[in-house]
Amino acid sequence: MEEAKEREKLTLVTRKSCFGLPTSCPNCLPVYLYLKFSKTPFDLAFNLINPDSDQIPYVESGTYVAYNNEKGGVIRSLIEDSFVDLDSQVRGIPEWVSAKAMVDSWLADAILYELWVGSDGSSAHKIYYSDLPWLLGKILYLKQVHVAKQILGVTKDNAERREEEIYRNANDAFSALSTRLGEQAYFFDNRPTSLDAVFLGHALFTLYALPENSMLRSKLLEHDNLVRYTEKHKLELVDSSASSSSGTQSQSDPSSVPRRPSQWSSKPKSKPKREKTEEEKKFRRRAKYFLVTQLIAVLVFLSLLGGSGDAEVELDEDDYE
Image (cartoon, rainbow, N blue to C red; front, side, top):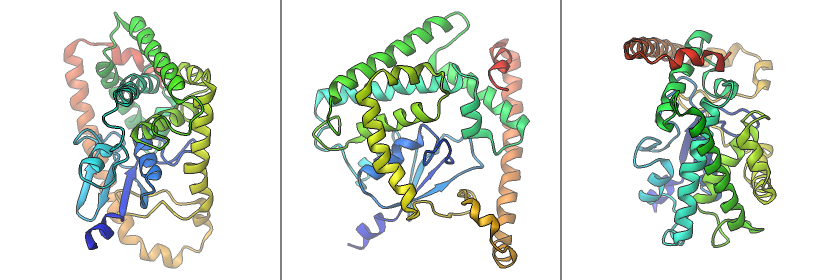
């Protein structure tokens, strides 16, 4: 009984909130929505000093931690570690398995492409690098563009063909999911599963975080029932939480640094500032350490890239102003 009580106290650590979303990171949104669909109580904290960490999002509960880069992701860890399982009744249904695979591969690839390769980089900058010095943010952005191209298999020779494939697969996925959903509230079994959480995360990110001229956005907007589904659940899971101000956002240790409401700046600063002096010093030390390690990593990356003869990253500077 005591263990079950402890497991209710989860903290979800994500990238910051913007674009009117609780977290603007496409990897973090599905985990947030999975916990919301499962009605699992949790606090939300933001990590601002590790923008390119593949451990984010992660969930903490006491001594338990589930990282994004372990066990196939946070949602799978929560299921395997018996925290919350929304898929127990659908896991054996072939149609559910194939639909989930489409979302995890085709739609995830399309978002990765649009965020890092097929856009001007403004969304990526706002989500990941706007809290960093400009030069460091730009270098990290170019580094991530290179990584995204490697993951997607995009080269100078096949760039047009890969772009066509990525958008064709995304369009096929939207069509199949639209047919499967119809006018139901959820994709399967009249109840939410991880498929709903992951698709809804992708759809919210596509509609709200990608630029208005986004090709992926225009393809999603062709399917009215998917858009209605997205807006309905946004109203129930995102907007209602924000308006209730019941505080899903928590102030964790300085490494997470949740962003505070603007009203705080108008409050008297004498006492609160004195109480938080040590905390701020710790955060500044961590931030300096992070900047130094990132600069070293970037220098190593650029030296390795310079020796490979691959000029693609230099050519991509126009993608990010």
